[in-house]
Amino acid sequence: NAGVTQTPKFRILKIGQSMTLQCTQDMNHNYMYWYRQDPGMGLKLIYYSVGAGITDKGEVPNGYNVSRSTTEDFPLRLELAAPSQTSVYFCASRDGLSYNEQFFGPGTRLTVL
Amino acid sequence: KQEVTQIPAALSVPEGENLVLNCSFTDSAIYNLQWFRQDPGKGLTSLLLIQSSQREQTSGRLNASLDKSSGRSTLYIAASQPGDSATYLCAVSGGSSNTGKLIFGQGTTLQVKP
Image (cartoon, each protein chain N blue to C red):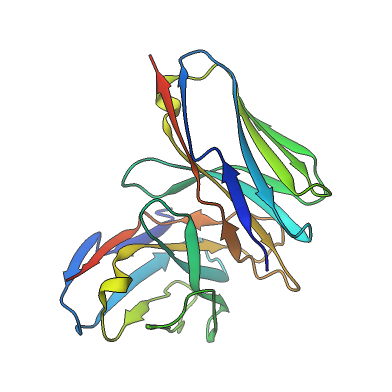
């Protein structure tokens, strides 16, 4: 199993541009998550999904959108990039059992100039 | 609102020393607590997960404890090695429904000197 994969690894955007961060997992997990990590800080939840077709906001959803059309994929969309969205973005997944751990992807480092 | 705090923010120890990393949380209604390791520029690697009904978990030289009533967890690293140098994050999962949303602390950056 590849686990959780994310593309791209790095990206530089100009203010106002848009992009989609891709996340795919091959573990047949129902639950998927997007977090962002600012320098020297812990991670904060942006959006999450409990299954295909079901998504909900996390702690810091403003400026982002998500969709979940399949179990495997959970893309994160930035519509109008702003410097405040410069961060490292992590995707994670877990199965539906209450006590099971989350598995994280390698991250996407995004810079908005 | 759940808040997670990790103290200290940074720690430097000589190789071979035993050490303890601390994590505290404000709401004791948690489903589980996870400890992660993060190497510079890398993703998160899960080290240990403690269910809310458990008191501790062990993996090799690592031992994590959980005291829900006091809102505390510790990660004990025995006989530290330079390869243990990394940032250690704790995160709790909880709330009114078990959606698995994690609330993270800011992390403790550990340096083990040869």
